[in-house]
Length: 123
Image 1 (tube, rainbow, N blue to C red):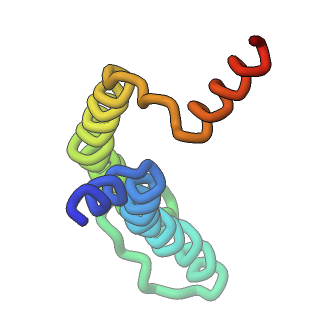
Image 2 (cartoon, helix red, strand yellow):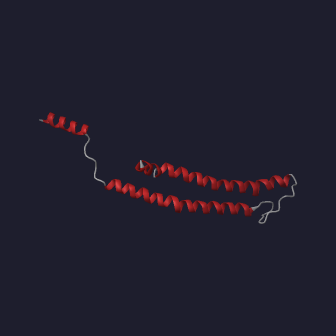
């Protein structure tokens, strides 16, 4: 059961899916910052809203919020890459090398029987 669990965890699909969820969550921060920092000020500008006092601004745009979200995303992506993806790729490569180094399995009973039939037919 432990070997089955190890194979399940080390499947590429599981790692890819979990990485996608983490990156997706970090990307949602960029989308939220874009909405809060650029789209909402545009709407507020046209609706004459006075609630546009953000620290780093370029005209009506809150560039600081967007830059912060992008940096957060890049930091999360780097952590995921170096702490999950790289070690997982290393473990997968070691397992693949171990499987390739193992001696090939012997012939199956069906193959043995077919070989005997072939040899008998040759005689």
